[in-house]
Length: 370
Image (cartoon, rainbow, N blue to C red):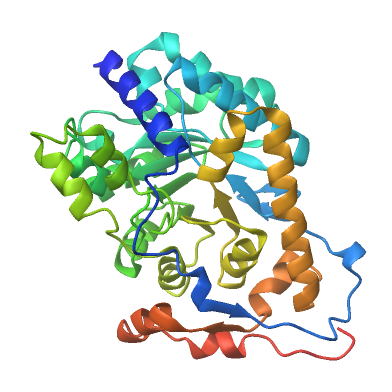
């Protein structure tokens, strides 16, 4: 079992690195969002403050490197590079599923490297929700936390991937109950995250009632794990190959998921899925996210080393600062007060679902000199 899990992690790294598993005919929806340019921003770009607080931890910028990898020797260098970069920049990172190390103690080092290289950064441990239904409990979750001295733990939801994966587990019954048990039994905050198919309003409410402290919407628009399993499957004789292709773009776009969730629960939100620029980060924050998360582009830099990873993150942060200047936003907390124009398929989806779009056009009123 442990060897099988490790091989799967290596496959995921290889497939995600080449970029072939990105969404094909759907996007994250950020192109449907228009931020309003201020010719009179009335602020000094040099004095823009990007600091924010998430679950009690201060960040130098509202950016986190999303859950990525671990559980294979090939992952150790990747996690080490990311950790060193986020430590220097005052950001945070999520680890990939730690199931492999729970099954094989020898693989713990591929995760521990993150805390070793980032002694002060915000680190998120990670375990699959489906493992909770298949025997994992408080003991295993605490082990993932202790493994990296984590500040929080993410329980990831990946029904789409499990339904296609040859080794997949598809019994998701009573998962909300299991999540609630974990949330009530550990000291660290529990984050629930989707892995590329999005969180709808109905599920966000269930998760809030279960006691989770934050939600990572993990929407469509970035890496498709249906596509990842498509590339892992045997193209000649496997139904999983057919399913991976058929369900490649399944799910809720990130922008849609973020708005549905923001209007349905009172929890800190992370926007993951197709975040590719500082402008995307600004849009996500304007819609109500506390942090934006970037994954696949950082995987591509992490294999090149710390310097390339740090530079990519710095570019994103500098672009965010520029966009805030052009919007007249002095602080991160100013962004949700700025109007956003929502158009296209995103507006159509949300209107059909009965969500209030007018609030985004009206949020905040600009006062000269403030």
